[in-house]
Image (cartoon, rainbow, N blue to C red; front, top):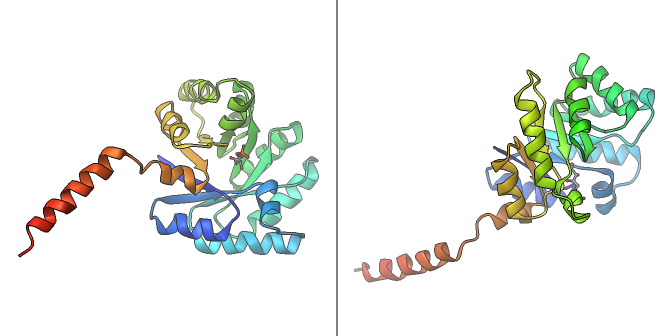
Length: 218
Ligand code: E4P
């Protein structure tokens, strides 16, 4: 089980890294825009900053949608740091690019995956990670977790190495269910990871222990 944080916010990444259980980071164009990062040079610098905080995989998404452009952009991103994973959308040119990157030892994260068929294509092309978007499937009242289970069952029967990176994870229950059903990694906001800590019996138990500890004081 591994945790990635889904953010481009350096403070949040630092806080997650400080927790000692952070294995990587995912970003996307919307998250970069949210941080106000503009222009190719600033975007590249921002990825370098993220990679200086985290030694695990950092997904950097291409903005291009044409094969040649995806290759050029992906190679540039991959050259920024050795833990960059090129995030490529699940489109025809993206699948072709994933095959190219896989043959050239560049790790990839196939993003915007919403069906088992798409996950099959990602695995066949040699993606390092496949990202099914759980929350966005739930948003349209389908069951995102069913997709995790389906992909896990399919991948289990194959000899491929693609890992299931459960994405668009919005709450602690999503995290638990995704791991239960076969996700290798989850990516989510730090808030969802911290939500796993909460249990009223822990709070009650700790209050009692602390009160009793006082009684043992000399
Ligand atoms: C994953 O790689 C995406 O960046 C992300 O998980 C999307 O999440 P959202 O649906 O909450 O925007």
